[in-house]
Length: 282
Ligand SMILES: C[S@@+](CC[C@H](N)C(=O)[O-])C[C@H]1O[C@@H](n2cnc3c(N)ncnc32)[C@H](O)[C@@H]1O
Image (cartoon, rainbow, N blue to C red; front, side):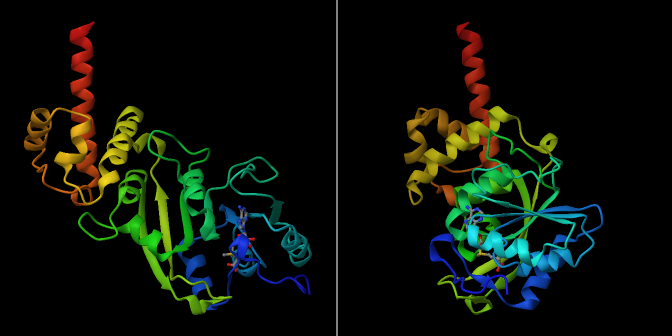
């Protein structure tokens, strides 16, 4: 068989998903139809690829880093005209299929060691658009990361990442995945999430997004510190007090208690103040 002699490589984050019910839940959550063109990052031995190809999609384009698996995958799916495969690093190479036409969905059990840069490539970041706006991503992530993406203000998982992703996408949980569902079992628990990036036209103004990013970097440096202490480096305390009053928040709150929309309001007020000062000075 195509993969004989290949054992899972830790450095590539290889954990084969063997639980059929979870594979089916992933495909179901993608709500695939005939017009869909799907990108799969890290097909491994093709367990998820096989399920994707059993649906009606018009294309599955896969990118796999492990060259030995690329050989096996070509053998396994050689007869499948709706399948294309590129060997290489999903963080570096083009994510476009050979016909150069964008895919609209991403479905993947991603290697956990590249989660942050891969997410950034797929959904963009505050102040920057991704190369492609995917309609929907169904990703199997490390549970800790998924929980941060989904967390509400005040919850222990709520972090700068929660604010960033929630300002770029709408997300929901599909199911938790136990380490027993993989072979070899990872040390951590996992979760399947659906992520739907906002249309570019629905995103905030780029300058405001950049302003939110800079606020988050400052405030979450001291996660347990009060805003009065962390934000003091960007504005005099009396100005901060007045801003906080206008927005109905307290400078005694900590960054993980502030909602994404409140970060946006804060960013907008500071942006307007700077603009006013700029106009007076010119
Ligand atoms: C967690 S395994 C998932 C395998 C398979 N999809 C499954 O569900 O059983 C992650 C896969 O991503 C591949 N991989 C790791 N780093 C990668 C990268 N930078 N670019 C593309 N693929 C990568 C690994 O070789 C492995 O096949």
